[in-house]
Length: 454
Image (tube, rainbow, N blue to C red; front, side):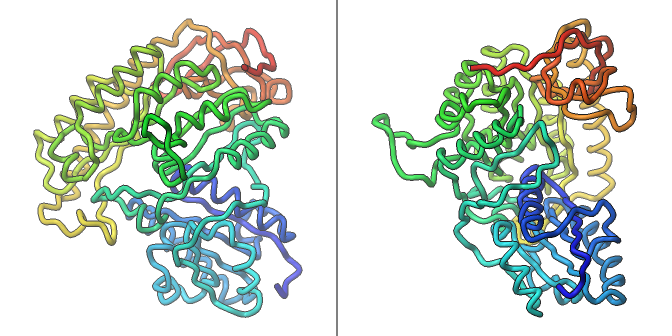
């Protein structure tokens, strides 16, 4: 670069996978001598890690790019990078639409950011969206937290849900070896991280692409086997994993979660629709009855487990009766949290081309009705915490109240209590819950301690 200002800013859109990718790319940039800038307008390198799951997220990216493209017309040494799923989907089209962009790179190229930027600094405009074999990244991520961390265990997705663009933009499934995952976790434990979330776009598919089978005929490496393998990594108190797919969520996995003390009693298992015909048209590969059996088995072995999920309303051709089947499933199960969205046609997906697309008015009405039910069921689920004593891992100060700290229960419920962040950060605190809301709790600290299970 010709400028002495080597400061960067990353804007991240979308899912946990994108957040983890951004941390890795931030680590690469800092290894290259860049420093983080809180203000994007003071940075000489801007990186947008994009999401294309829904149209509004994609349009927000173009809005950001438009503002910075004008800035680059006056500041020629500004470097603009577009990474992630929009970059993979649009490729060279992005350059035609916003020619001020210097680098377009898909999610599979996150570990190659350094070498791609060197090409940019040599005067090239670069597009990196070709499929590649992901290699282990020796760069340490610049993690947003000093208490909790993401660890990718599988990249890509082989599913072909008719509404979803992820397989097109994140590539085929590629599992990391158990040894590589355990080594990263061991280093995190040494650095003082207390909770690790294992990540995958379809994490239950972990190991399908790795060699070997057991005498019983199943894959040698599965998510269940991985949990047993990494459970006793020193220094780590809690384990979580996301995102699960009901098609592959096994009773063996549920039993492992109930047996392993570090695995938190929280499961994020998207169901998307409560209607079997809609699930079939989505190519999800399960029925709502199978989904119910999964939840019933979890609650049989872990009665207090928290269940969260994702749901889509307004899928092409969805009738009012089919939508009401989703409402019934939500009411029957009683989710602790539910991410909801109105169906959004995405480029390159079969459902985007189907007839019987529903109007925005119908989708908005159904989304509002579902969200009202979600808030009601979440409030009802929260009542069980009132007066109870919960173990809370303190992550940070409450940004809205500096007199409070915040953390999460094992069931992933956000919890606040009065306290000094210097005293409590990174500690497991016994908290008596005094106030409950739909999606968060307030309590009083009883005891703070360092605790490592296993």
